[in-house]
Every structure is written in C-alpha cells, then in structure tokens.
View (tube, rainbow, N blue to C red):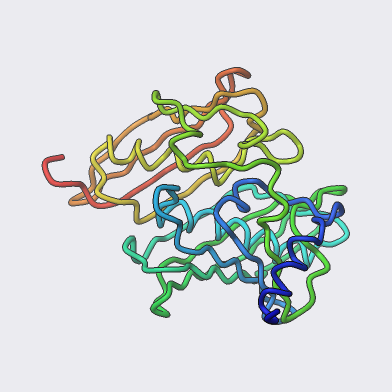
Length: 268
C-alpha cells in the first residue's frame, strides 16, 4: 500500500475535532488554512469543480474573510474575533487557478482587531488586496487556534452540512434560505455566502465586474430568507457604483450594508 493511500485512509478514519468551530461555506469552497510563519495565515481557495459554482469574486471574499479571521484569532486568543467589515479591491477579476489569501495583523486591541490580506493567484500575480476589521469578543472561536507554524488545516471535515451547488442554495428569486447548510454554529447566516447575492445584483445594475467592494456587518441574519436590496446606482465617468443592503426578511431588519463599484457593462 502506497504512502499516499495510507495517509488517505488514515484521514478518512480520523474523526473531525470537536473543539474547532469552522463554517460550512469555507468547507464547501474547499478552503485550507496554512500558517507559513508565526505571524501569517494563508487561506487557499482551490479552483471549483465544474458545476459547483464559486466565482473568483465569491472565492476571494471567502478567502479574505478566513485569512483575516484566522490571523486575528491567533493574536486576540483566548478571546475571539468576529468580522465587522471588509474592504476589498479586486485588481484582476480574471484571476487564474487557486487563490492564496495571505492575512496578517495590522493592529489588535481589546475591542477591535484590524488585519490586511493579499490575494495571489496560480500565476503568482497579486489579484486582490483587502483590509478587515474585527470585533473582539469573549467566548468566540471560529477558526483553528492551535495550528503550528508550517502546518495546514483542512476545513472540509468540519462542514456542518454539505452546501452543494450554489443553484441549490439560492431561490430562483434571488434569496438564500437560512438552514443547516447556510448558517454557522451560532445559527447566524454565513457572511461570505450572503455577499454572493451582490454579484447578480451588480450584473443587473449594469456593472461588467466588481473592482471595489465593501461590506459592513451590522446585525446577525438569524431568521431568513436573506435578500439583497438595491438602494442606488450612480455613474462616475466610465464606472458605476451600486449601493445596497442585505435584509433578513424574516426578522425584518438590515444585516449588511454593501457598496460595489466597477466599470459599466456595454449598453448600460
């Protein structure tokens, strides 16, 4: 029996750790968390399998969130870091292959922690940069804390439930239902999954792609379904700015504030 086969069998027989909380969306994207040095965390987002969905933008947001959150949690431990807002600049919307999102801390305090993330694709090109602000809270542990420098942690065994293709998650009317596949262990809607609602909204608003993106999480999405609601569309020279919010329809409240900017599509 080959060494690779032995390792695979051992991995299949090893039960997932119960002291680690991760999210179903990160597991569905096939994310792996790698800690190359003591101060840096990388989230590797592989090229999605055909038919499963997962655009460059969606993978980039997910990878940025994971890399920033993991690096923040390493610093604020034993407290935990929860994503408050993400500012992402997409430098190349046609990024190729796997995405490596490298996160490191800028500043960590008692109440807030700020991380920065650089996204590199399979060509070695920098395709995105981001800053992520976190709120620091006691009793929250979202990602692995004990991973040693040089070690890698695979999120896949910790998925709460298989997410499946995005087409199965979205309603035909552009909503996401909150259930075992689309919530995290606290029953709160997956932030990086919810922001994928922005892509079809941006296309409908006449953006050819998203270059600059911000999201601010202001309340938990706990009832659902969640839907993106457009507030305004503004033109600036050849670019277009989309402003909107994600609402938890069941709770009747806004859970995210969002802006997305990019070049206007032809005919818009």
